[in-house]
Length: 98
Image (cartoon, rainbow, N blue to C red; front, side):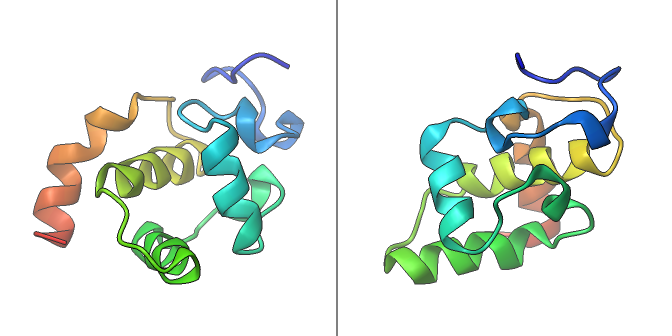
């Protein structure tokens, strides 16, 4: 499947990499924290997910990774797909400086 669009039924999305902004490296990080299916992102807390990935890999990731998680979760919750950088301002106002 190519990257999902707004019209793609969420239940038909089978691979994490079908979600806009999710590539192989991000998929691998998600799998390492126990998320192997796109539907597992529904209703997740992006900040908790970001912190899990940082803790697991024992490094602080750039906050844009949180933007990617926000975009993927937002999409799987039924909103239109957006580029990760469309979430940067929201991340900054919601979570402040990380």
